[in-house]
Length: 187
Length: 401
Image (cartoon, rainbow over all chains, first blue to last red; front, side, top):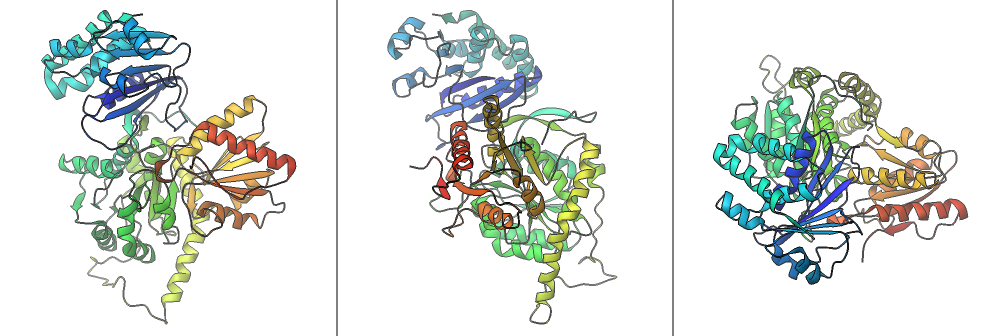
């Protein structure tokens, strides 16, 4: 079973991203679970959300404690939250930042697994015109952990967004995911 | 409930438990829904209200000003002969209290999804079973759901059970607040037509308020002369439902190719020890059972699906096979003797030929997380008891500081 934990701040779309990944996996005939850790709900507050993906039915109903991957949508959280908590030897950490993975490793004193960075905020500003880095982070994750193929992610975006926000914005989201997939730096 | 192939036309959609229940309500298309939103039930009412606004159902949606009014409107509409539903959680159920009893004693087949949440106080919006466990003596039927799929299917099943001519009792369809109500899972939604055919057109069994040819009164003063007889009838109805519900379940299983039952046994046949627990924690327990079985430990699970009626014989026969049992309660009964589930299991196990050791764990109050490790520790305690025959404490608490 693949388990990922998402760190973001209320309003940055961490919940949407965790659900979106699950929905795309469902379209690829996987079993899924996506749920946030509900605390005081307010914009800007740190939040965690989770996604589980498996080939077999998922019976467990408790929070993820040992994720295979952690995605940090807001790098300012690194200062206050132990984002590497529960990550194993092969753990994957993906951070939305302009910094090199080496700098993140040093900052967190994280010597294991994989650290990857991508400036998803800049990508979303370039493509959508607003700082909404959650969708690009899905593209970044797909590069380091191809649990859901890019094609499935793109299909899901079309399915979910086309009617709601129109072709132009849908394409901008797809562009954002593709750019993050290309621009991610692994170290 | 074991996973089986679904009937043709079934679609798997990414839905939260609340949305799955709203889908069932859309397919049932009840005559009346009177409801007031409350966390974590809100998404049921919100989603269904959208269906009503979009014309996807013919339901008369009554946005009431409180839960007391919601249940009052449901009583009125059900007595008038309308297929009636509502939904609530925690303090909403508490505010309905007076009318909850009236709905049951008036024998009105109302279906009420309840998204389990801790009752105040202190105020808390997260999952435990204090709300519906408090209503266990209200005369309503209660079915508990492990995941979004079961919440969806139990809503459809519940409608037929409540309306069965020999049952005529309201039913609470429970699921765990946030844990399943707000978790997205792949939910298999049966074809609309198959669900509509299964629930059928509602034909009230009793004369209704709107039948001018046969005028009747509902809920009149009922003093020393007849109140007792009516309560005796209620008692019979609950008792009889235990025999009738399996018939309805059987029809559901045949129609939708499912394996519902009053209780679910999981790897219990050759088990030395067992945990008995309701709802989502039963799912987590299954994973622990699988892991411990790989280590050669003979552990099992009994998940009561129905709590009202209490499936006495099934529980006794299932648990008589093991040496030690832990009942996990997500509610306190404040009797000083353990949680509500424990008290009832212990009571019926008095009739077992060989009485196994029985201990209680209170867990998860106010949404406190329960992890696989916690459940594995319970099995460890049980295996010790099975070996030594010694029980240290009958009443225990998991994950509390």
